[in-house]
Length: 234
Image 1 (cartoon, one colour):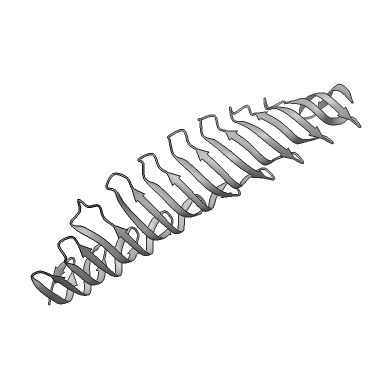
Image 2: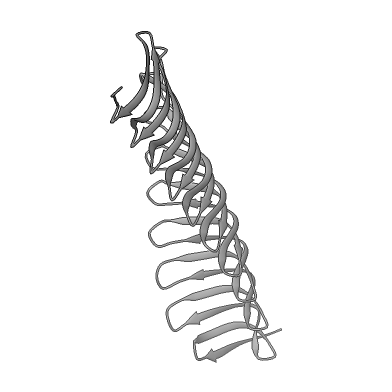
């Protein structure tokens, strides 16, 4: 296989050629400042290689028909990193993201986004295990709150507790558990709240408070009727 320097409108190639095209091992230096070094097949990046972009980003891994394809590592100039599968140039399949701020995600990707099942550990130590859609918590999952040692299991919409779920409080909290409806992070709808002193409320909630028809059972007796803003009316 011959080695040769080829000039293209986009840059200069030096390496193995076949039929006057890059084929085999070589280096392509683009006029933009990007540099690719690795394997070529009929003029296209194909096989093992690495890209050094003028932006400071880097990719090292497998290529197919000119695109990152298969296992590879993409490192951004700011220190963010993706390690995992690529499909026709996209982060797609199983992979791991390590962000420069300390956040990590391990799970499924689709078209560059976190999508499918995954586990994310946030910079404050909180952890989420469950469904993602377009990088956000969407679907079923469990969110662990490290600071308070509490957790939520249930539905998420656009990163928020929304739908049916169970919130379990820490041993230090007077509340023990809530099972029911959530809206925009708050208890909202119908649910059951239990407390460490043995009290229990079953009924309607609004914006996190007893509101609507409900029954509070405690050592002092039973209050059954209408509530508003956490106060019993009748």
